Image 1 (cartoon, rainbow over the protein chains, first blue to last red):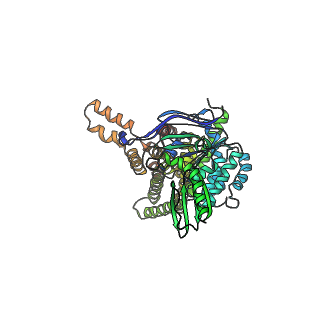
Image 2: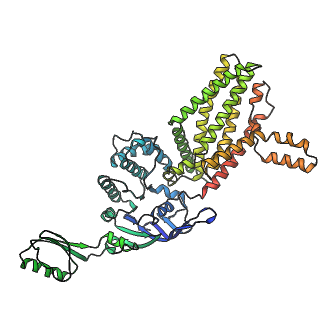
Image 3: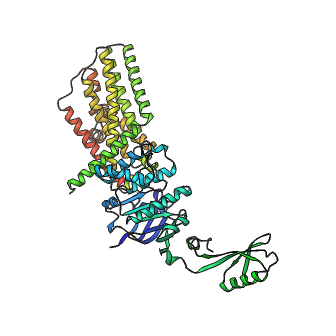
Length: 307
Length: 265
């Protein structure tokens, strides 16, 4: 058994009073997260990512489908002792200090007091909150709350870490720190399952992704198999060619004085462009190949956004 | 059958949740403002007692115990109704129930924590009342017994508030719990008031039947007996404790059943 998480045909509908205004949020969500990977659960706002995570962590109950976590049913509460969870924009008791929060959460996890006392200083150091752990949480910044949230998710040394939008609302430094922490978790042999709509971060660290749109997984698999390795187009910057007419198949994107930015989508056309530029005495400043990105893949599944 | 390890974990979790609830209350400025207000109200009602006609000791004792009782009940209702709702509203519950903590344990921990807060509150008010009575030479140790029975009432009221808090909003919960409190303190008059006017046997049986279904919080109160220096009946304490235990058990079970499959959106 090398699956950390498996969802099969999971449905969830929110019903209003007297079942008026029902809204189906998850429609047969099926995905498999192998052990030891960083798995990105991507989708636009309102796609159902947080609902899926809440169903996995027992905060919501699925209407249909099967959920298995580390080989155990989601109904088996003991499995939650083997997972760590960071909710979106985590809310904590702001009258507690960071240290008190970790003690409290550790006691709920059933971590023995001696192990807790030995583990907390290391975790505080790992998330970069040394010297800040005795401050009340109401004095923490958003980034610090995210970090103490990560520390509480790791208290029980979990096999599976589930993070809901861990980089949301953080500045670039905070995002990099969280990315590094996620990579460190993978190095420790943990499986990380995180939701995000920040594609650049996901592309940097994910081994596998699933894309959720309107409650349905529209694509799932290893990142390298989902993204084409072929170059999609080239952007060429040419200087000193104000009067140059590019060959057919090229499109001029910008023209700044004698400098042109030209997009080419075929290799033969690129060769023609380079030859013509040299012939007209223009200098070629840059040739940038573009492969398909996670963003292209993502947008291709969003109605009205596909390229 | 739960193993010893499981039981120990459950006890640790309830203790952790209760201790956190206690910290939440005692680190809030509102708690101290309420406590100061309670003490001020107690001193004021005692002062009013001295101005009243009749036995000063009896009036001070009566007004003092009533103040302690009403104020404790109001605190239980207004803090109790937000006990679960606030956790959901503030989303702090996500961090708790995503851990291996059962929803029943969560309810029990929150309940135990609030009961600890109410105990401190009641102890402080009883101490002030005792000092006032001692100052004027009217102190009786039965004040502590009366406070004990008030605490039994608080156990029930908090369980009622917790039940409503686990199924509805704080406003509706507060109204329902306050209604329970009012009915609980007036239901005992139902048979005496109605029965003489009812002509048929079935009407009298119906009235008595309704009384038995309704809560009767006067079964737990000795305030009048203490202030009038009347001894409590034999077996009163055992009946009061059994009534409390049974009512709290039913309410906690109902809360647990309602909360068990509730979606935390």
